[in-house]
Every structure is written in C-alpha cells, then in structure tokens.
Image 1 (spheres, rainbow, N blue to C red):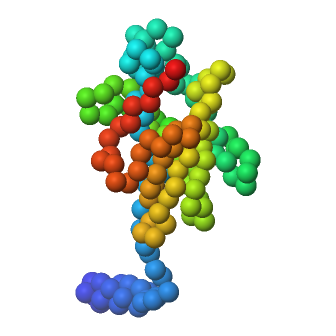
Image 2: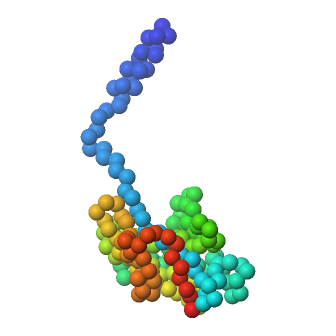
Image 3: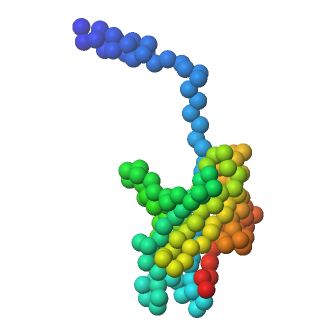
Length: 162
C-alpha cells in the first residue's frame, strides 16, 4: 500500500509539470554602476573622516532624469543594499570609494544622473549604454568631461573636486 501511494504521488507530480515553450526565462545583464574615489585638490579622500572639510555620505542624494525632469531616486525593495542609489565601500587597496548606480531605462541609449553631494554642490553624470546584449554602460561623463569608456580598463576612477 505504501508503494502505491508513492507511485500515485510521483505520477501526479509528473502530470502537473508541463512543457510550456512560451516560458522564456532570460537573464539580463545590467551594468549601470560607476565607482569613484572622490578627492580634494590635495588628493585627500573626501569621505575619509580624517580629511578636513570631509563630506557626509548620508547627505548624498541621487536624482534620475526621467522625461526631462529630475526625480529623487529611492528604491523600497526590501534588502536593497543601496536604496538611495549609492554605496560607500572599499575597493582593492582604497578606502571609502563611492559606487553610484546611475539611471538606466531599457528604452534609453543615454541617461543623466545628478549627484547632490550636499547643499552646496551638485554634479552631473551622463552615461551611454549598449542595449544589444543586456544593458551595459559604454561611456561615462562627469560634468561634461569623459571619464570612462568601455575600452578603458575598468578601475575605480579618481575624481578631483575643486
């Protein structure tokens, strides 16, 4: 009797599974982040508490330009490591670098993200994307100056804030 019950359960499981060829699960690569080492004119890390006039990472706000208008970025996904669109982290031998998740939308080839560092300073990140195989950044500009492209060996970019 026990074997009969196991047989019925296995049979039910086999028929409950169906081949649905319409179910296409594809992973999409999204590469929209950019790493910065933000330093002052003296090459001191602005997120290091030992640096005079350092910046408080908690003041940073990202604005994604959508339909021509800047919108404050926030994601309410539970467990998101970056609900405000950035992380302060360590990178190789560098302390306190900033990883910014730039604006990306599948129908855009170019995006604009404003970084409001504090009440006194806001800078612009512009990125172009390659949408043919996922969503990968091709070029990044900081305040109109090209700071990275997909030919450049990837490494944390140093931005000197004057």
